[in-house]
Length: 300
Image 1 (cartoon, rainbow, N blue to C red):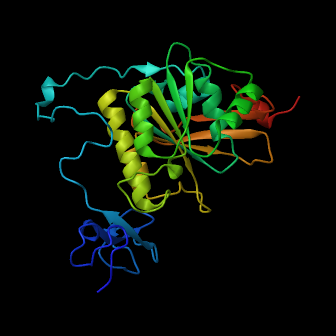
Image 2 (cartoon, rainbow, N blue to C red):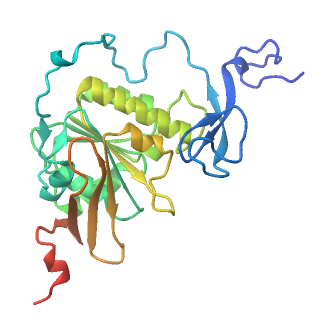
Image 3 (cartoon, helix red, strand yellow):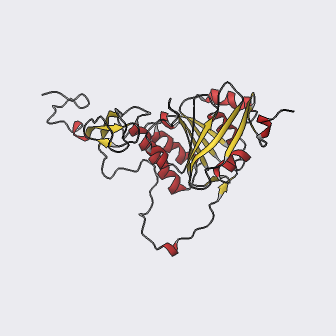
């Protein structure tokens, strides 16, 4: 009979170990199974199941989002008022067009791309151009001094943008309650971890739980949340496919880092078309909008 390290009790008397269990989760679609299987019955991929330790939820625990709302009640369809969704102007014609006319309040947007392609630069130069709105930029990969150097290189410094270098989901929601922002940017979702999940940051369970918590916050508060995600070697967004199903909009930032031009395309958009493209040119002082794409293909 072994001894549990957290509480120094024997296994039969331990109350800590009884709250934990091990499951196998598909790294492609997020399907879980009590035992390892070679082929995922949900997505059909082979050898994608990984073992993860999860902890049973505690009853009557305060929601991780920190917001308590009344329980939803069913209503008839004619009682629902369907007005045009209010949008936030990001002062970027290309990004506004790809989003369908601007950023919808209460929406959850995911921007994916290769490392170093310019995702953080695109977001930082846009949020620094917004006036009259309080913005919280959460960075799990860069320090505050690195972000300040990038802002200086872009030539934009705003007093309404708050920088938070944190990876704990609970600490992020605590600062959200203190700052009460009008927009939240999380860079990146693969670095954020919840204390309710025992697995490492970037795992299937962590990405799924953190994205679901941010989705609840966005829908309950009406504050738009933008997530930054990395892509794997196959060109797909890293993490489970359920991440793309959770969010409202999925944008892909593409291009060769050795060349100047970048393309922003919409893969999924619940508030607009997926046939729009945004084209940018990478410069020393940030990304320049290319309003006339023919200048990429034609010479004088």
